[in-house]
Length: 283
Image (cartoon, rainbow, N blue to C red; front, side, top):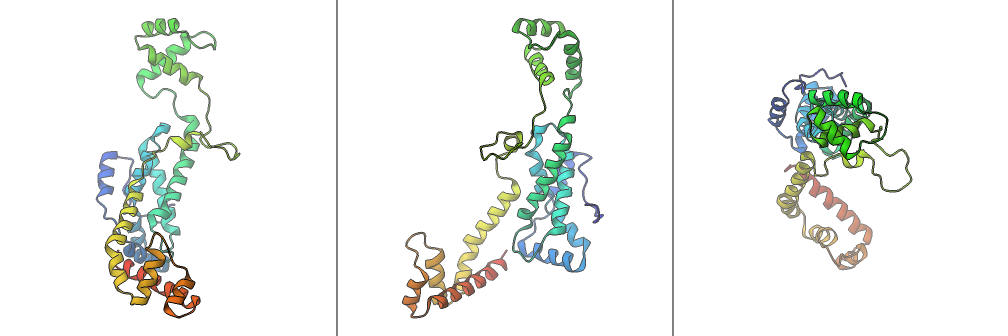
């Protein structure tokens, strides 16, 4: 997306310098995200868009690391991911109560996936000078399409002055075929396409950050939010939401307080709304 025209850091220079730069941008609270999102939506405030983008550039770097197995430059992946982030910011709805990092993940990954699919077939078989030399020599010395035997591998390695395993690896590259990154059909069976296993399975920093923020809200903000309720509302929330076992039904609580089940539901809804507002103000 080019419509923002913002001074966003570029990953085309020193990658280490870029990563250090984006890691210095402050992380926004949920309220700050909401306020900036409203400024962008209501007033087309490009400075608000810039703040939303730069505060999440570190997330793009993290996602890009998960796709390094495709042989593409990390800086290129980051640039594509940044485009996805900008698209997410443009479409971000501050009223839905969803953190931008959760919403943006789809757009960041989508842009990276498209970039990988466009470039998968043009990834070079030989990427270093030594590999290119081995590539051309191996192609000229190898006769036919049959796989080299162990003795042939040793002899060729001796002739070329390389290790036998390097010859085997290059022969594998030469004989390799295109592999679909994503499943070609949806037959309901487990997929073993590269897209399923080349990404990093560890939680990304953006997800870890969001989980930590949620945990902080639960541990530090829950007590204050509960304290803002009247005794009846607190009793309903505690038994309906905070108890792991023997949770009462609306009818059970209705009998306890001498009101209708519908009235208990209304009290519950109102109490939950009040707690969300109290916890959101502490984010």
